[in-house]
Length: 144
Image (cartoon, rainbow, N blue to C red; front, side, top):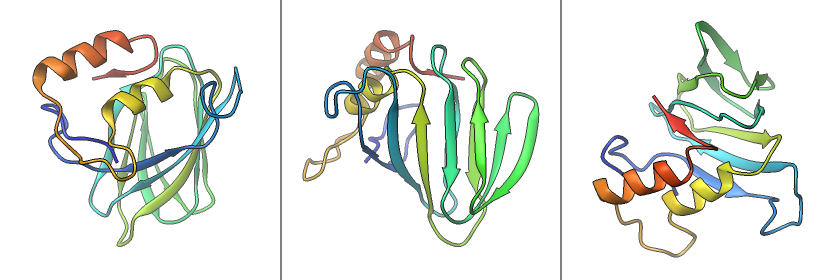
């Protein structure tokens, strides 16, 4: 589960890394599943070095890609080219389950450092920890 940090004061989505260089041997693709709770969102961010595709399994979201805003529903595919600002709001009455696939590794390292693993206590990040993680992973994840 994503941990709290000063700019993101609420543990939100859960994320399960499916395959990456560490767990599955893929040197190119990083698929994961995520769940966005009711009333929560994916905060505005971009991935400088990787394209991303989101596949909504259920629910309704308002997706912001750069200057474009679209309402998307279960079954939708959202392509996000590298460097594009993205955010998504859960508009429905149930958690949104989605699959995300990244064209290059990098994001999974950020997720490991900013999340609590299964069975771990979800302890908020301090401002210093947040700054260090964001600097270390700026090649893969930048928040607005």
